[in-house]
Amino acid sequence: MTTPAGYFEQMYAGSADPWSFESRWYDARKHDLTVAALPRRRYRSAFEPGCSTGRLTARLAGRADRLLAVDVVDAAVRTAADRVAATPHVRVHQAAVPHDWPDETFDLIVLSEIGYYFDDADLATLLANTHRSLEPGGDLVAVHWRWPVDEHARRGDEVHAALAGVEGLTRTARHEEDDFLLEVFARTPPSARSVAQREGLA
Image 1 (cartoon, rainbow, N blue to C red):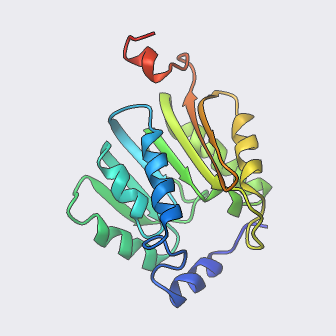
Image 2: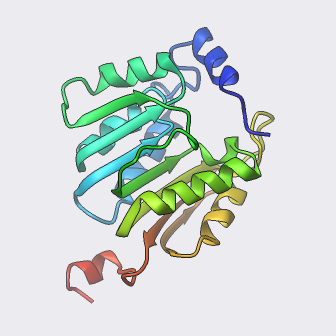
C-alpha cells in the first residue's frame, strides 16, 4: 500500500532532517549527479514533487526560470521555503502527490526518491500526471534508492521499469550504481535528442 502521510509527519516530528540530507556525503554526491544529468543548461519551468527539506530544490533553482517544489509535510515545506527564500522564482507549497497535482505544464520534472512510496494505483497516477504535465520535448529526471526498505511499497528498480514502459517517454541517459538508479527521459514526440545533438555537434 502507499506509505501514509502520517509516516512522514512522524519522521519530521522527530527530526528536522530525518534522512540526514544535510550531513551525508551520499546525498550531497547524489544531488550533484542529479543536477549534472540535466540535459539543458536552463529550463523555463520545473517541478519537484516530494522536495523534503529543499536541499536538491536549492540546486535546481539555479537551472530554472521558475521552479515549483511541493511536499506533503508542513514542517518540510517550511524548511525548504526558508532555504530558497532568497530566490523569488521558486515556489514551495504543501501538496500530497500524486492526487494533489498542479494544473501547469513543465519542461523539467524531477522525481527524486518518491516513486517507491506508492502502491500500483498511485504509481500509475503519478506516471500519468507526470506524462500529462511534461511538455513535448521536456525532460524527466528520476532517481531512486535500490535497496529494500520496509516503508517502501516497491524497490526503486520497479519504479524505473514502470517509467520505461510509459508510452511517449524515451530514455536518454542512465546512471546505475548499487545504491541508486538515475535516469533521464524525454517526452516524445518530437524525437529525443542527445546533448550533443541539441548543440549541433552530432
